[in-house]
Image (cartoon, rainbow, N blue to C red; front, side, top):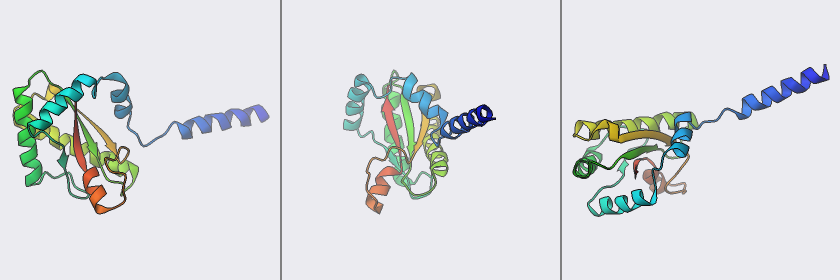
Amino acid sequence: MKKLLAVCSIVAAVAVTGCSSKSTETAVVDSATDYGSAAGATLMEQARSAGFDDVFFEFDSSVLDARANEQLKTNAKWLIEHPDVSCMIEGHCDERGTAEYNIALGERRAEVSKSFLANAGVAASRMETVSYGEERPFDPGHSEAAWSQNRRAHFVFK
């Protein structure tokens, strides 16, 4: 009986610790690609000098406003001019809301950004998406100024 109880305890512990709010796609992307490499960082510096930047969202929204549309047009232009560059579009959220909700919201933000770029002429095969939800804030603060920097689609080059 003690052995059965010990085995059940171990199985329960593994089942509980095996669950997390981080998506499996995120884990695979982190370990299986070289996004964010030194070469990618150099490309990002070049792109930023041409106006390429992250796209920001309003609270609890994945809707592209006028500012986001203009930024994505700039990003699309640069990506079209550099057809050998692939990118990861990371969806991020501020700390408000549940981890699960924020993973889903981050995914919608990344996907809407990818769809815009694809519709603008960037090959979808050059873009991947991942959601980090609230896991990787740009600004760790707890104010509207910090949160507004964390509600974004962030681009990383390969």
